[in-house]
Image 1 (cartoon, rainbow over the protein chains, first blue to last red):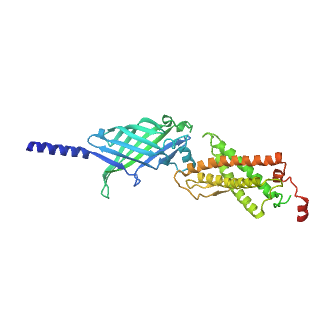
Image 2 (image 1 turned 135 degrees about the horizontal axis):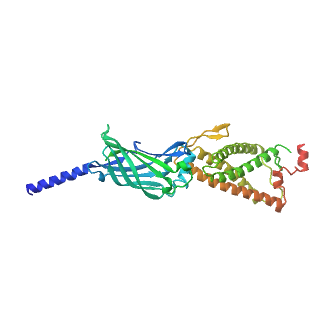
Image 3 (image 1 turned 60 degrees about the vertical axis):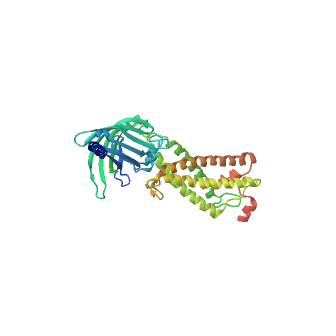
Length: 192
Length: 193
């Protein structure tokens, strides 16, 4: 092998390694409970009701050099809906809302990631909820990233979006103030 | 009318408890079927389930009294002319009816208390949660509650038809004595006097 060939091979290896390094894969830290899928909806227009999904999983890829390479995927067990009220949660799991027997999973898969300059960005993707898949946009803010005290490396984001319930075939009449629900994803991932 | 049961008649306490439970079971069933279909803005949306739960707890208490009274008192023997298989079938229907009432109250209680909240009985007192926090507890208990309730009301219908059959076809006093309309036979009256 010529010196030139060796140089090319080394260069190739280094660039491949570098690009692999640039795209970091993170598993959402549900085990340590550092991730939350929360929602809120107006009650009669007089106050907010907060709820969350307790069981979900997912991963995301962060590529700081080439943000277009970044992506995120989250799968939610819809039956884990929790608003701290037994009968309301029962109702939410039923046919009027989440239909969890027919549609036990909700899923978000990103289709594009745009980064703004100030640690914010927009993730576009497909949300499947109640068996209906619709494109949505999530406004994202990077909260922080860096090494943790236990030898790992973590990154965390906060995503917010608003869903029209009717878009996902949820048309139970909760009143005019309660036709949209705000979804907040507070996600921390541990780098693989 | 005597308060206690005799070997051939029901006493006043047993009769009152029987009809109280019958009215409660039918009323709770109708209320339950109606209330689950109420819209969010219906004035009864919150009140109907609250009443359903409160009366359910009251029914359980009445059933406990009834069970103790039954065990302490015994029940009259079958009317003359009633066949052995009828007596046996009736006995098992009664056993399942008792179990059904308790099972429907317990399953309903497990819905309401699935997240650890107590069940309020009017504004008088509340029954605390015991078993709670199981995965999807409210939904699983809810399915049991529905099936048990429909089964119970079906069996109660059979029980009522059987009573009518005794009254109209066999022309015996099986139904009349639960209405307190059958007099004890003379020999018995004399013995008790």
